[in-house]
Length: 157
Image 1 (tube, rainbow, N blue to C red):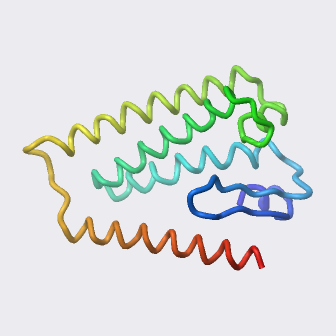
Image 2 (image 1 turned 135 degrees about the vertical axis):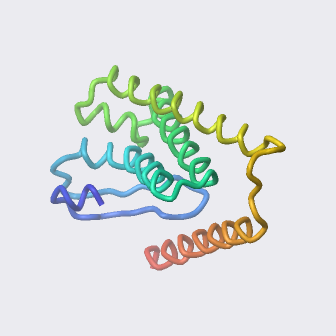
């Protein structure tokens, strides 16, 4: 999305379930914006949704997304693999200290929020998830994986 908004053309995309999604834009006039958009929007989207609908289950997912994106950036920097976002972000001009500062902040904030939501959900007096909500959530997850698989098969043709 960010690559297209910055004037790039999508040349390749990976949306298979159980693998890291990625997209390549050629040309990519603003690679830093394109690269940062994934982890930033991957955090902001769920946090905004949880803020609007104010459901504990949504906050659990939102904090997990913040934790996962921060950890992904940190581990990518640590691994140093040239195909991961962290090394591409640094190669595009972002200072290493800024990447680390943002990654650590995302990881810590995500961990604290996720841990608090888990603790609140596991308390005996806390709100329990209804069976209907659990069934809808499971159905949505199955639908998401099915749609991702179908899109991946269409793209591979």
